[in-house]
Every structure is written in structure tokens, then in C-alpha cells.
Length: 370
Image 1 (cartoon, rainbow, N blue to C red):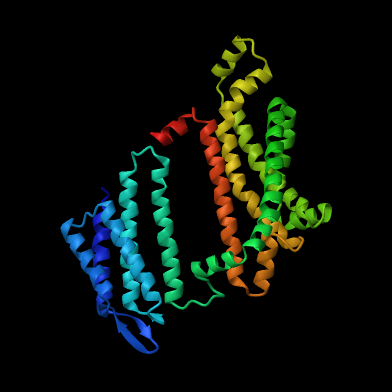
Image 2 (cartoon, rainbow, N blue to C red):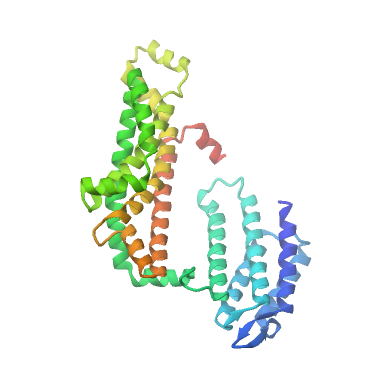
């Protein structure tokens, strides 16, 4: 058990008590006392009873149940008041601290667990609390839409524009990102093998690769548009340039990770360069290669979206973001951001799963499962 658990439980109890003493909000100009709500009083009583019963060391299930109840109560108050008051914010703090205690305790309990699916509960719980705090903060504080929309407003915009968002996703991700990602990584790996084979190329190509990586994205994107047109090939070309150098550097480092004893053993078996490369050096370089693939999975999406700012057909994530900002259609901007964030996270996750399947033998994978 972490030393932080009792502190979180105590602070959550104090915040719950404070939420009873202050108005939860106003309807018009009339303040609403939190103690007039049976559910609010019951929540505070449960928090105090649980803290006293478990002596500030709440088990994960108790913290989770109390946090869920607090979240429901917080969201319920949003429809009952026009403007949140001090009691509402302290209630939100209490529920958030309980959710933190739940995630903290669950993380400690699952530290030795080998079930990856069970381990997803911790980031899932943490993500839910962030979304709830975002929703409660924006709506409770009457934050203007142009500054920050609530998650519910973003989701409503996604649900109302699925066809348009899907067309943008196809244009940006399926065409530009995936094609550029595959070409950039493949070219980077092949040139890394060529550099490893030739000392001349190592001295000549690596500095050029470093120069390419230093090119500003806002400078090369318009040039790619002039060279390859306004459609997705110009965006794929930008992605190729962005993903080429990370793969080149990581692959070159991975190919040199083997020690002399291992290479001498392959030579003692009469293995040639290509046999040694295929059976020893590429497997040893696999963690480095997958590291580049994971880095590039996010760089590729960023590069394609930014490149669409400089010229594209009337479709694409970057095009939609730039035009929606000009119209002050902020919830549509956030809808595109949400879609791109989910797509990038899933893409990264797929690459990470492929890494586990391919490099299961590597010590880093065994340590992660231990």
C-alpha cells in the first residue's frame, strides 16, 4: 500500500465536508444549499463512514464505488444549477481524489499481475476521471464554447458528422499516413542496411539524413504540394520525409548492437554477410526498429495533418481543422482532434502489439511481463 493512500482518503473526506458547508450553485441568483440534496448528504456520509471504517486505508473497490457515486452526483448537479458554487467544486475535488485513490491502489494491486487486459483498468479509470473533470469544469464554470467545449458537445458533433469525419479520416490517415509511413520506414531501413554494408555511405548519407530531419515541416509542405499536387500524394511525401530519419538512425544503431563474439560465432559457422544479417543482426536490431516504428506512428499523423494546411482537396483532417477555425466552429475542430487522437493511439497500440509478438524473446519483453 502506498503512503499516499491515507492522504488521498483524508483530503477526499475534508473536501466532502466542505461541500456540505458551501452552496452547490445558483439558479438565477438564488443560491442552492448542498445539504438540501439527500444524495449529496448520503455521499458525504458514506465517505466519512468509509474513511473511519478502514482507517484512511480504503481498499480499491471501496474507493472505486465512492468515486463512481461522486461522479454521478457531480454530473447530476450540472443539470440542477445554472452556475456552480463552492460546494460543487469541493464535491468534484472529493470525487476526483477518490478516483485517484482507486487508480493508485489498483495500480499497486496489479503491479504483479500478468494479465494485460486487467492492467488496462488503471489508464481507463484515469482517463474517465479526466473526462469527467473536463465536463464538470467546463459546464460548471460556464466556459465559452470558443475557449473549450465540453466532451459531451464534442461527442454530439462527432455523432452528427460521422460521414464527413469518416471521409476526412480516409483522406488523411488511410491514404496519406499509411502509404507515407510504409514507404518512409521501408526506405529508411533499406538505406540503413546499405550504410551498414558500406563505410563510404555511412560517412556520406548519415549527414544528409540529419539534414533532411532538420528541414522545417512548414517549409517543405508547400514544396511537396507544388511537386506532387494538392491531393494525398503530396501529404504522403511529407510523411515519408518525417519518418525516414528516425528509422534510419534507429536501424543503424540496432544493426551495430551485436558484439564481436556473436559475429565471430556466425563466421565460424561459415555464414556470409546476408545470412548473418538475416539470422543475427536484424533480430538483434528489432527493438530499435520497432522503437522507430512507434515514434513514426505519431509523427506521420502530425505531418499529414499539418501538410494539409498548405493545400488539399476539400476533404481531410487538416483541411477541416483549418476551415473550421476560420468559421469559429470550435466543436468541429475538437471533433477532428478527437478522431485523430484516437486514430494515432490505436495505430501506436497496433505497432506495440506487433513488437511484443515479434520480439517476445527480448529481455525487455520478459521484464515487462515479469
